[in-house]
Length: 213
Image 1 (cartoon, rainbow, N blue to C red):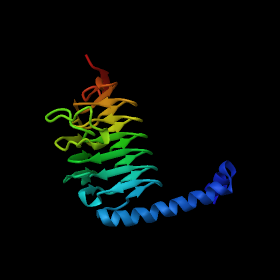
Image 2 (cartoon, one colour):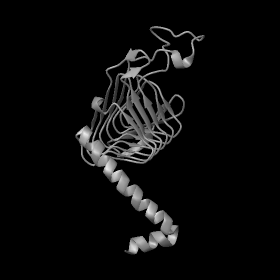
Image 3 (tube, rainbow, N blue to C red):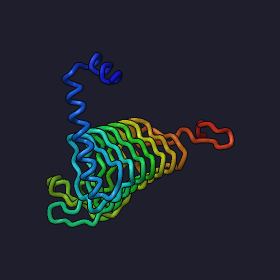
Image 4 (cartoon, rainbow, N blue to C red):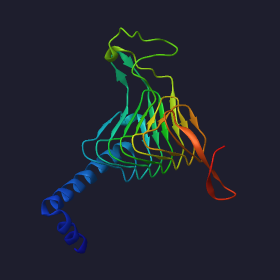
């Protein structure tokens, strides 16, 4: 009761009713989606879009804020894909996160993602082995489906980080806000920028983060 009184004093009765309704809806949605995914403690906020659940494996305790976009893309126009998204235990993501795969995305245990993080394993158009024409409408271009994204356990991605197709982020990494990850980031490192570059690594003997040389 004390917490309720404090909430009402700070926010008013309307937001209390809204909070109770939202919590009940999130719990019900989580139970139904968790049953489909065969996992426990699955919670996603309102206005979320989830597609391709049969192509996903999600560990227990997954929590996401509002406007999550989580999609294993099985078809785009005439293209057909066999995607796989694997998410470990205890992964927490903030609002507006976008995770999508035409091939394979893996996220390790206990990762934490800030708001508006984007993780995708494909491009809208093909620009390497085969080539989309710049005269072709972007919406009509073929998606690519031959790359993977691997994110290790205990990774912290700041707000608005973009993880590009083919990227690998090692265990225990920290990536600063608004960074673009392209390629591989070694485990136990801190990076930022576009593209993200390592500027600190963890020294286990000294038990501290030290500047990279």
